[in-house]
Length: 164
Image (cartoon, rainbow, N blue to C red; front, side, top):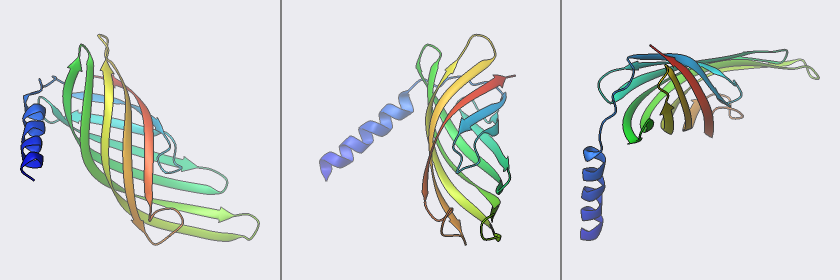
């Protein structure tokens, strides 16, 4: 137990001594991933300090059998790795709604849901106002529909954002 406590203090000390990376005040672009069957999301990041930010993502899908919308918000901490590479971690949540129509049985199904999420990723900040990222966002959903939302979803996405 004592070794575990000392190890935990060492990890915390390491995390807090990492050099903070100055991040852009604003970034807007796309987050291209699964997003629980909603696909691409419009993504906006707003700096809240020297090394933390808020990310808001809006995803929607409009199709023949499935319509949906999802809004996610994630608070992130950003740390410098090497050169223009950064890594980040955070937590957040969101809400959404969907409507599904089964053409064979003419059965309609709709539901709203909310979720909690974690987030970890790596990004490259180009010398031009371009930011590329790859992140992993596990989400636990809560809703009435057992089929789609009351489960653990592992969302991996590629982000491309313009910084200003």
